[in-house]
Amino acid sequence: MTALVVAASSGTAVAQAATSEGSSALVFGACPADIATPYPHLTCANVKVPIDYANPGAGTTTLLISKSAATDPAKRRGVMLMDPGGPGRGGADYIGRLTQADASGNTRLPAKVLAAYDVIGLDPRGVAHSSPISCVDPSYWAGPQLDPDASANRLKLWKYWDDFSAACAKNAGPLLAHMGTRDVAQDMDQIRAQLGESKISYLGFSYGTYLGAVYATLFPSRVDRMILDGIVDPTPERMWYKATLAQNEKMQKRHDAWLSWVAKYDNVFHLGTTLDQTRAAWNATLTEFRTTPHGEVGGSELLSLAYGSALSESLWIPLAQALSDYVVNHDDSMLVAFAAPSADAANENYNAAYNAIICRDAPFPAETIEYERDAGRSAQTSQFAYLNMWTSGAACASWSVPSQQRVLPTGAGLPPILMFNSVDDPATPYEGAVKMHQALPSSVLVTELDSGKHTVFAGPFISTNPAAQQIGADYLVDGKLPAGDISIPGHALPVPAAASAGEPAPSAVPALPGAE
Image (cartoon, rainbow, N blue to C red):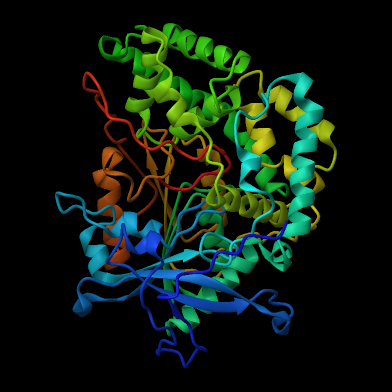
């Protein structure tokens, strides 16, 4: 099978060669339809970059960037690139979520930030509209997947991920060896140059915090203002492997926080008035789906849904309603709709890019026994340990491209940087944020208390933290930072009505997710 290559629409402008600093070489035009339709205010351009920066003559690949132009040209102070995380998520459409007003005229990025910046979204190399890589037919990800916890499935699951790795080596093309974060950071500087900017500001969520730190380390003189939110620990040698293990116990704690919240509203959901009771309802449902899958949804898909819903509170109400429908009324329709996996080209590209990036960025164990040993220990305190092991690194055990020397952030020569992390973030645990903060001495860390949401600034309206919004806006526009590290109160949790409309389910693949 050949790799799927999805080009941007013919209406998208193609970048010309870079000109002198201060003069943009890019002509922005129409975006691809899947971006232009929901976000008509965005414009797009294509940027050609070398596949291999060590050998620039070996060919190029094409990146798609989008732009939300500064709303007040008189107040414009520059450009701000944004990465939503993943890794493997595209930013070209994501900036539409941050910049488009809702029915009340509110935007997730504060209005004064939108007045001052051209906000630039990047689909990183190999991702979404940027010459996307692909490894397998999308049907590979159809459910129900094998139960990740069952010891009888271990050999089958190792073969599943080994086969995926082999397919990537065969089908992903020359980009596979050049998908690391170092390459993406170099792409960012190419974009900066072709935009005609001497410096760029940057907003990175989740994995995007590591990307921002790598860019800042490689190109410190090019950094203007930078926000890192939901922060990756860059210090372990096996960075992504250790990050996965660090998530498991935190994810269980966050899942239990949701179940405690469900218990608070027993008058709505009728699943029990205590954590023990709501946990029993969840565990019984999980066991039933493990034993007898409901269509495409088995235990693996339910666990993936729970993982995704733990990242913010946007799904707390509808997921609780779906669980209630099943437990109380024996109606599985809402739960199955939420948990059904996406077996389409976009999800396949995400899986291919995610694994290509983490396997290239840092080493993983080569022996399967080490994965199973560590997951087994973690499973004593977390339902998510084996799921995370399989979906967040098992492919790297047999990956065809060796890992490169990871970039350790140094903080040398950097201006002040603003960081956010919630105290109970399960995807990027707080301890890792402290490590990144120590690695970047010019940074100020803002801690959201009483919160386990993944990322803090410019979040969905349901979980907006006004203090974080004010701090972020003051920094980006006025250069004003808190005098030192500070803590802010957590945001309000949702309050359910008697019923709640359904919402789109998160990706069925956990990984290190991006901002919502």
